[in-house]
Image (cartoon, rainbow, N blue to C red; front, side, top):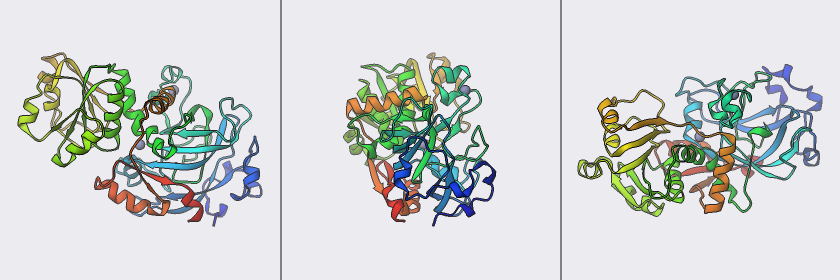
Length: 387
Ligand SMILES: [Zn+2]
Ligand SMILES: [Zn+2]
């Protein structure tokens, strides 16, 4: 059962326990201004080596610019697993992962102007930033000079408590970091647009993909399959690069015009200097030199999946000999996150998802690690009420 007593490190920043709202008091949850902390049910990792387990915790008392959200669905991203298992050396515990959140507004602060109780909304990878640097002023909060506050595992800028993500029944977020779900969009399959969708859409837009361009998509996972759909919708001729012959038919089903087996020297040799853009979603080391040579002069190779030193190294000649560009991109700003949702709704683009209940999350992580999902697990958060 929910227990405020389990929270022992953050008492000073929460309201007195006597004001804690019981989760079942639904009518009180829908008052316009909610000023107390709320008990939340989630699934948390308590160490890098233990499975996710049910965990009751408190969501902060909403601030004037905050929106309280009942979570309906949450996508399951590779980053959730990497963070919780401390693969990046930045984890803090307990952590409730999840940054592809779709839900319904249950309360709004006095200063909230964009959202009302009952609105269907989304929250992606960010929940705050400095809000005043050049990047933030341009709606590029993802490139905030002070670093953005991640949806989970980041210290809150106001009270220093750790943020907790969307594998939970509710969340409290500033309205600046909330997006509106477009009318008619399928909420379940829209959840992954908040990470996988914006991560692939933003660079395609920024680097100027236009109708007729030849675009290569490297990797056919959660990001790659969204990249194929989005590049097609932008009018590009799309080629999917995959290591496995078995993904050929699947790539065509997703809308790719062509498929190239990246391990085939014949197939790679036949495409020299034919691409305008490569969107590289592969999260593991791979030799990008053959892909650079597949770019036309002035072509651009965009990394979105790999954060480590490239190995093997890039041959400078593969860039300088054809004035090619090696670029990178990280998710997208809040205005563009709204834009990609609207774009997907207008173009009938959704993520291919497999729905799970929250108590299947550990099994889902194991399967995700093996690449055994087409292409995103999404948690039906109604299941947490029964767990
Ligand atoms: Zn993600
Ligand atoms: Zn900033």
